[in-house]
Length: 417
Figure 1 (cartoon, helix red, strand yellow):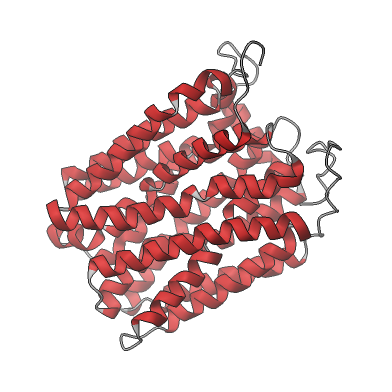
Figure 2 (tube, one colour):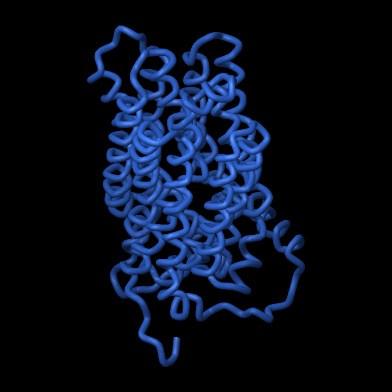
């Protein structure tokens, strides 16, 4: 970047952490406010799973086009636009009609679709290989931090001023983060080309998805992401409403436990990343999948008479595992992606995960309605984590990291996911 002082990798990471922090409102705002919203509209609060599915449906529409957007506008501008769309989507919910809730989830999901690929695009070219897992995981701590923020703030504001105020508080925060990114835009988006030509956006979207067919390493990581994502978003979507409906816990207390789980998720992302940079991603991901299966088993078996400390312990374990995996996995995708295709590979993973989330949370909501409880729904999380273990057992271990100062291109490390 001639004539510009390049931004520190740590400043870039902090900026992108903020985008993920605000972006979590797309998935979590309505689920954590589901009890008062459901009470006003006369619908079951357990239908909150459909909000997650609809948000992912929106992400499916926009995510595959991330590569085109990144080339023409740059990663920071894409993040800003995504946050504005997320804020608009969240705010739609204040209309208080079931159709408005549907539109809110879909629009917020459309905004979220390009957010993760944009962050990976900005970081990939600036991160030394020897600390890649750590940097990506630190950036991704914005996800549990954002979940913690939403879980703490939305119910509090909603309890004091009504659920609509809680919705608008989270939407306003997303807008503030979009504005806060502006000073970084010129330097970090210097690689953009507004007049870029080449393949049509549709063709580029299809080319991104084709990576899953041609690259077994990316395919295995993507399947792992889909399996672990089921547990992650089941936890984020149902943990509050499950406590309120099944355990009789007050809304603020239930939201507080979810917030504590996100603290564990932040710590987990950092610790897993440090471990992975030392011993490789595969054993770290295997440990995460096993821990997520154990925590989901606890959710499936919990009863109203269980002490609050036991439920809090499950929240902490679920946060450290089911929420703690994404930064590490995204770092591995960036590591094995073809040169210049980190955004495309991340978009392909996001599309596959979006398809999974389109089905899984809604299926869980239907299971709750059919069985009258949450045990079977959380049982699906246990099964998904078991599938992740089986897939990871077939992935070869990562080669030793190069010595500092020896550059290794993403293509050279494609065989070591």
